[in-house]
Length: 522
Image (cartoon, rainbow, N blue to C red; front, side, top):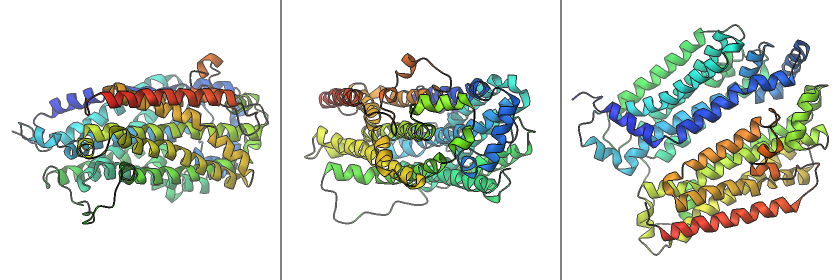
């Protein structure tokens, strides 16, 4: 038996388990990239408009920090500029989640030990996990290359390969951390922290220079993606940096995997206190999720500060471009460009908060499938109090991060704390409704729980590109965010808010009723 025996079987099993998440992720990311040329064609229709955009971005360090530098005025180059960083973030997030799920998660649940007792090679599980991450990244590269070929075949290939390379770079980083840590939660958290650091380094470097030449930019894989310069005189040698880093991290992961026992790690978890200090299910839920809440809190506060600081310069960036003005008005209301921009940014933060609440609610699913829920429920803890602890963290955490986003917007904008807090907090009914959908799926059809990610992704896609594509109002209204009042500047409408809160309560009640009636783990 070789060390890779049964890799194909494990790969097929991994892809079957991710048959919902992977296609949804590929579809959302590819759609975000491939719809951008038509959007940009409508917004910047003439060479003069695009040349003016380049001048504005070069002069505005805040926009460079947010999106990156732009190197050419072709539609392909503008597409790579506008969505490259964020598509790279999605690719990286999917890569790290897939790898951790099929390595450390499997060991933590005990399933890997059972599988390893059969005719399975020592490194087969790690290889299958990396291949499971490579399949969607390869699919994304093919879709982006084919879809953007009309803008330039070499640029489309460079962008597609660059996105796939970012995904695999963080997949191999997750593979290393999965060997070092004993907890899947810690492996995911550390890899996500590396991703956040990569974004921060790129933002700081791009704010300092307008050509991507800052050393800080070159310290970030997201900076490498920008400096690949798709559609702007491609630097193919940058792919060599990705290949070297992926190979080095993969080699380290394979070396570590061969030197430890299944279920063990090189950085074991610290033993807890001799006397337990968690007296309730809610306290346990907070202990399990506090790291994630802290990370999201820091990110939302920082994003609010950045977006608030951009509001003062949005009029200069938009200039006389009526199409851009219309997009902001569709996203944020017709209350003046600055207020429309702030309202649209509050809406975008709400869309991202929907991802937080789905991940937090689905912690219930993870606790069940890993077998950790049964020992808790075997004691004097009912199902509803157990679930309520996690839901309090999910729904309360969503309110907390949106509050921090509002404070960040006010700090970055230099005032108007009340209106900006209201603009962020009014997003909560829609955020909570998405969380309630996740609760409903987990309670009534736990196998379909991952489909909550598809719901959140579809809502994010509608909010991200729907206004730019000038989609009909009835399509945009499929998202709960489309019914919210546009604050600041717009009128507060309590009717839609009340309807969304009522739907949230109904879905929560139905989901919790289903959880109370079915068997745990079924």
